[in-house]
Length: 588
Ligand code: ATP
Ligand code: MG
Image 1 (tube, rainbow, N blue to C red):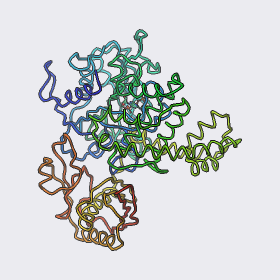
Image 2: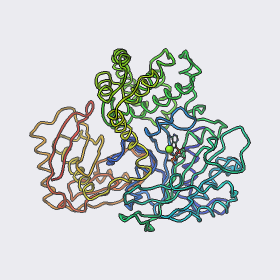
Image 3: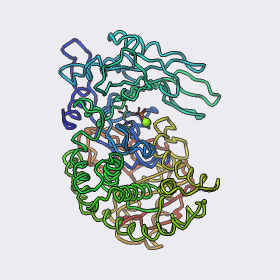
Image 4: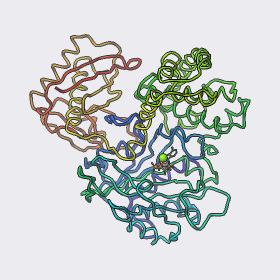
C-alpha cells in the first residue's frame, strides 16, 4: 500500500456516511485540509506538532464550523525528536492521520473504529497477531482506565497484549497547569521478522507505536484535582510513515516510498554508503527544511525562531553530508522531495525556486564560515559558553553542532554556562515539539482573546489604509502582544502607521459587538469575508464580524465586544521576508 492510498483510505473510512456493512454506526467525519506548519495564533510552539494542534480552540469548546466529527492528514514537525532521528521510526517531519470527536462519540467508538480500520481486510488488513495496545494503569490522581481495557478485550485482544502503563506513557495532559487532560491508549505493531512474542513488552523496540487515541475527559484544576470534563473529546494520531512501513513489511520508515529515492540518491553520490545513520539524518533534515521553506509564512534561515530551526536543520545536514563525503549539493535532494510530495502538497512545486534558492544561499553562507570556524574550533582545548556563542555568532555553528564536534574531537566542554545556554536552546526546540502534545493547550486567556480581536481590526485597517493587496501571511499572539505579518512591498510611512492605529482605536471606542456565523465558503466570499480561502475540502467556515467594520474567516476565540480592548498601540513595523512586513502591537 502506498502513502497516497493510506491517506485516502483513512479519510474515506472516517468520513463515510451511513453505517458499515457489519451494522456499525455512522462515522461521518468532516475532512479538514492540512493546516500550515507554522501555527497561527499560538505562541507556545514554533511548529504544528500534531493534528490536534490547529483544533485546540475547538477542543476547548469553541464551535467548529464543520461539526463535531473531524478528520485530517496533518503535516507535523517535532524538532524535539531530533536526537532520535536516525533510528527506525523518529522523524522531524511526518504526517499525522487523525480523527476527532468534539464532545460527541467517546472511547467505545474510537477504539472499535481504530481496530476496524487497522485489521479489516477492506481497510488495512493488518495481522491481529502482530498488534498490541497499552492503557492507563491508574494512580492517585485518576483510576485505571478500565473502560478502555474492556473495549479492547471485547475485540478479543488477549489480556497479555493489553499493557497497563503509568502516566508517563499513557496520559496526555498538563504538568502543573490547569488544562483538559486524560488517559490515552496506544496501538503497537510488531515490526520484526522474529516471531511475535505472546506478551506485549513496550520496552522491546520491535514494537512500534503506530497510533494513539487520547481520551480528554478530565480537567486539572488549580488545586491539582482532576474533575470530569463537560465536553469529553477524542483526539487520535496515526503516523503515516510508520504505518506505510509496517503495511509493506519494512522495519523502518526509510525504506518506504516517502524516503527510498532520497536515500538512494544520497548513497549514489557519497563515499561512505554504510553510514546509515548519517544518511538518514541528511534525508530527514532536508525534507523538513523543504517543508518549512514551502510554508506560506515565508520562513528563511535566521538566528531566531523558526528560521533558527531551519538553519540548524540545513547546517546539520550539510555537516553529515561532509562526513560521508557526499559529492553533490542539496538541490538534487530537494528536487526529489518535491517530486515525492507535490501531488499531496502543491505548495512545494509552486515554491520550488524559492526552496532551491534559499537552500543554495544557506549552503554558501555555511561553507564560508564552516572552514574558518573549524580551524578556530580545533585550537580550543575546552569549550565554554562564551566560546560556544562566539562560534555561533561568528561562524554560525548551531550549539548542538558544537557539542557534537567537541565529542567527536575529544574536546572538553566546560562550564555550566555552556550547559545553560545549550539547555535554553534545547528548550526552544522542545517547546516547538513535545510541549503542546503533552498539553499546555494554547493560552486562551482574556488577554489573548482581546489581542486576537485587535488583530482582526488591524487586518482590516491595513487593507483600508494601504490597499487591497494586503493579505495575512502569519499571526502570532502571546498574552503580552500581537504580531501580524502581511503582504506589502515597502516600509509603511509613519503617517500610515498613525492612520492604522487611529482607525483601530476608533473602532475600539465604538464598542462594536464581535459575533460569528457558520456558513458555506462560497457564501463567506459573497459576504465579503477576508481570510484564508484556500481550503480544499473545508465546506463550511466560521466568519467572525466586528460590527460592520471587519468580516474574517477564523476559528476564534475572541473578545465579545471591542469596548473591552483598551488602547491599541503599534510598537514596531519591520520587514519579515521579501514582500512581507511585520507589525508588533499591544493593548494598553
Ligand atoms: P514515540 O513514543 O514513538 O515517540 P509519541 O508517543 O511521541 O511516539 P504521539 O505523540 O502519540 O507519539 O503521536 C501520535 C503518532 O504519531 C504516533 O503513534 C506515531 O505513529 C507518530 N509519530 C510521533 N512522533 C513521530 C516522529 N517523530 N516521527 C514519525 N512519526 C511519529
Ligand atoms: Mg515521541
